[in-house]
Length: 367
View 1 (cartoon, rainbow, N blue to C red):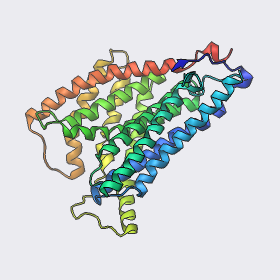
View 2: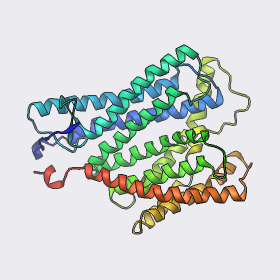
View 3: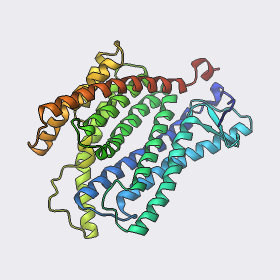
View 4: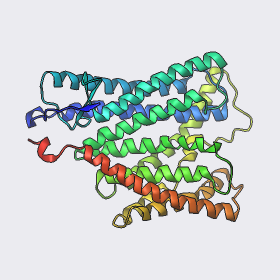
């Protein structure tokens, strides 16, 4: 890929309204995918096997398709404008990069979201072949599912990039908060893969949740470069968690009744994905906001400690009591959470600064 020399739009050619529409479609598609994911996880928990054409799967596919088509339209429009030497506003997805020998000119944010959607199509075909070969999926962690989830994550990263370019506009600010919240909630499914690690002294699931949560909170806060950014993301995540806490079991039961499938006898009604999201994120975000003047690793480590320390308490609260880890395992997990939280704070700050550099300079935007 080569960086193309994009013509900066004049004030009369500003395309901010045109930028809102595709950006909203991209983040809307990722939200639909998130709905499909929380529904699909609950389906595997409460019902069990599924086929390729289920309603949760259709939500996943539809969400990725919406994001991908919106990204493709922006790329084609940008390519046409560039070839005609017309002004291209860099606020729409960022400056254009040349693809396939500059055959296409793609705004970098939409390029990333579009690539994620294209990969989703490839893994979707693999998933269809997988179901045709083996029939039902008994678990969510099948090889094509892992590829599907990773590709959706790439699309979600592209959505954050699209809005970060327009962070000086109100819609860009709200978009960074919303898309980051969707990415954080979705990243919890990545933690499921840590179950494959040996069950040692440290609870890798809790450490992984702390790492992704702290990193994305820092990324959003530094991308917006204003107070309250991390807290706003945490509040939106809490709202999504509350809605999905009701939606996941309800949608699963309704769909199971409609298809004539029974729920498992041992179903406890606790939603899968919402329960993976730390309930203490608002507290972590407050710590990040209060300690914004100190090195990023300090509030990052504190955030990791808060999440790993509260994880067993959240489990006991949700399940009405139950197992609490041994003192050695509990303290070792907190120590690991502090270390990975510190790393997440540093990485999140770096990623946030990178997102800020995607935005065009003010003098170029108004030239």
